[in-house]
Image 1 (cartoon, rainbow, N blue to C red):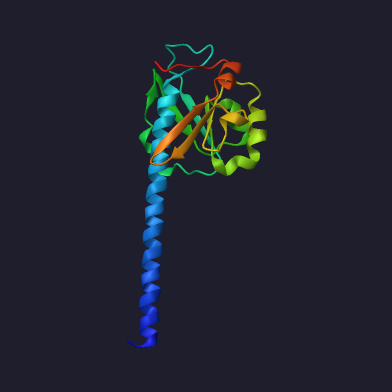
Image 2: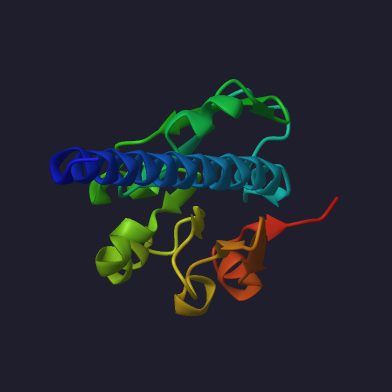
Length: 170
């Protein structure tokens, strides 16, 4: 085999392995966010907002701040309802929008804005959720972190109670 042909075979093999690794990585990340979407929906079903009318059919707004890493994973919850309230998903949330949400997911890409985001909440009854390490310890309410093949959930009950949210396992 000539040196040129040999180097082409090596190049194509490396390219193939790189693409295989990327597609595996994408599939794992996609699966992670499908799990996070499912956990988010389950969590929302366990929360009671202050002064919420149990018969209300008003939409419940779930906002996403930062890079959109959920992508198609949100399709699994976009037509769901919590009690009688349909979910409205807003993926292009700005700092000015955060108090108009009932749920705010802060993507780990927004870690540098975390203090500003939590300050903008201004004690509003908005459930804050994130995949930022130690989010619940930093004043957020719920941490969704990947652990092995699953998702680890940590809830800061002091933060939820402070704004009048009740989290029930019922």
